[in-house]
Image (cartoon, rainbow, N blue to C red):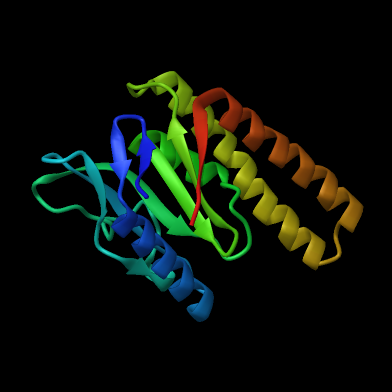
Length: 177
């Protein structure tokens, strides 16, 4: 059954492709993804070129749509969670939508505002510094420079920031398999 996302339709075939990519990601233990491309003729979302492994950084030109299609988002897998990083939110905001899939299912983060707002985007990008800080904190935890409790306290602050951004700027859509 197709899924409506605002004026777009996510057809069963595209959903099945997402599910197949989740399986590939689980088997290979690497993230996979593709651009979500709107077929202008029927308003259906189609998968773009598959990107996988270490080359799969969503901000690269690896993700593409066909010439007669309009990019409307990104789909990629996470190995552990359906929750987005701040980078995922920034990419989702600039692309209108970011969908994440894993063994739990598929969750899309659709920008609430129809048009791009530079101030909202800037706020999301500012919080990205916290994401880099969390990587540094994890390194410090592994080097035993901070305690597990200290790390968890910082992680909770980071999660609250992500939740605030999601609540403020995104509509969350859970897609059933």
